[in-house]
Image 1 (cartoon, rainbow, N blue to C red):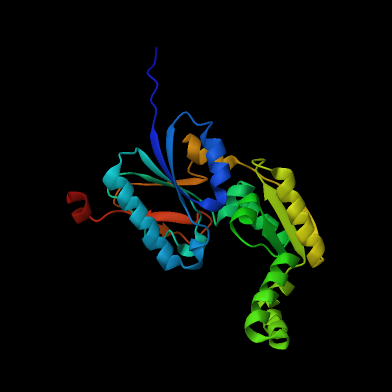
Image 2 (image 1 turned 45 degrees about the vertical axis):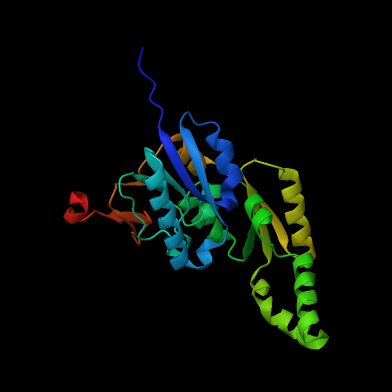
Length: 251
């Protein structure tokens, strides 16, 4: 009888996808430990890189894993330059969390081209952030009114929320995990309040499942050897890596 070989994975991922990764990890034959990070790190790519590198260093100092998995896309280049000392790293060829929800970077490009004026809603975004809605506008107005008075508050609100004018649709997407009907109802209510068309897209769990199941084909994933640095490839592959220097290998 062949011996069953079970791998140990450390999954470092954005909390915006915690439900999806937790659910599909339960179907993996491998042992997976989660290291979820706060949503919003991509807003400061330099700090994101520093934080993720600290997580990598801490994991390698305290634990022994076969692979480090990353539930991140390019995310404003926040993963560029990451490297491990002794553990291979695995990245999906993804732009951001929406690539994980859509199943591929190619589908994401198609959807973006078809709906360039759409704002995205997903379970993770609804749970971890304040999505565009009448409630958000009213809370912002109340906060500004308290500090600047009615007239100035309304002017400031118009300026702060001006980016909403670029959107005319709301897209809701999920992978069938969690209280789906409630998330969808929330997205539908937000779209109605803002006068947007609601579009519901079917999610594709291919990338999420492939990452945690250990099914890393070169089309969708990049395995980075120890000592090598993650690099952007500036082509459809999105990611590549810079091999380690000989001095790094000696050390």
